Figure 1 (cartoon, one colour):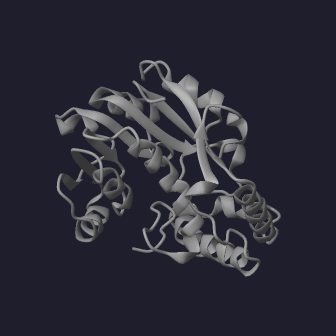
Figure 2: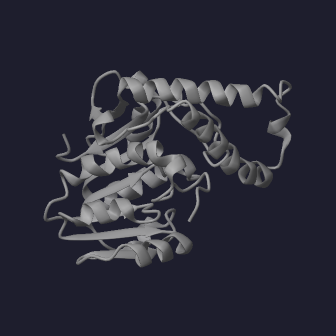
Figure 3: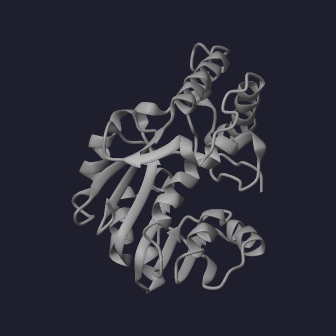
Length: 255
């Protein structure tokens, strides 16, 4: 599968830095998954669920049928299962898990409060990530909304018992790359000074987004922006949430 704007591919050199950022949350969750039953709500191509399955007793990844087909073909391990399931009907799963994770999904759903409530009811511990609106450098037509830390905690606290916020932070070179990406995006948007793109039907905007996102990243690669970025370039912690790349809602014993 190639980058769609909605789902990040497991193997695509143009999006390697984006993938490392995404995997940072999975590595964080992996530290809490040993010997446990885990649900990955929005498992995409399955590479994150496979990482959790290295230590978990059982991992169930759920997503749309087309993603599940790819994930099931690419990732096989004892206790790892992928199912096609509507993420806005989580109550229909009829199961409970020790740990529930959902990464870069809530910004896509129509009822984020209901989604968080359903996730919290499925398990004892919860980890959810979403982009920090204050650090977003480009428009994404697939995102229905994004939040600041204050807004996200206000959203989560009434429906997720004991909800707390952490942030995914990037190293200096990751932040430099984000600034450069923002400059490239603004350069492209300079061709639309009147903002006419906002009048384009959503279906057309979504088709145009993936190739433009790839173009921006290839321009960054020409200047070696992001070269060598790896797991050590991302940390997760409770401080400086306004400058976190992603916000992380946690509950239960997650520290």
